[in-house]
Figure 1 (cartoon, rainbow, N blue to C red):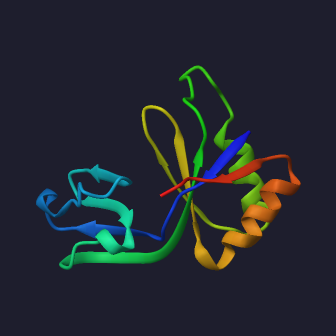
Figure 2 (figure 1 turned 120 degrees about the vertical axis):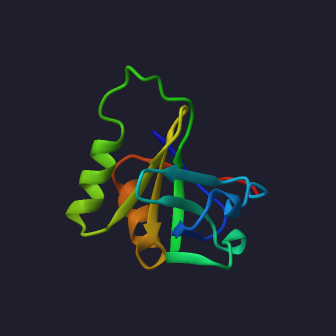
Length: 125
């Protein structure tokens, strides 16, 4: 399976209102519930006035479009990283899944994934 390294460092944050979403970034993930607005974007696009934030994430995209009938795509990745005590933050879109890892453990995670048969390439940008 091919995993693509996303460009830049990401922030996972809680924002006050949807008007703060930086749509100019090519990688923006937004979640809304009755309790919060969550935003994942690259650090340079992070709004100034936020409620809470965790910076220093790097991202991997599972390459290709994943059919909804596919089962067990994320589980082996999550299990492999969990066994190495590497925390992940996952975002799913219609087409695929994205795995965010803390930058301090990113090189270790990449090496572990490659040792276990995953191919890694960088996304230009």
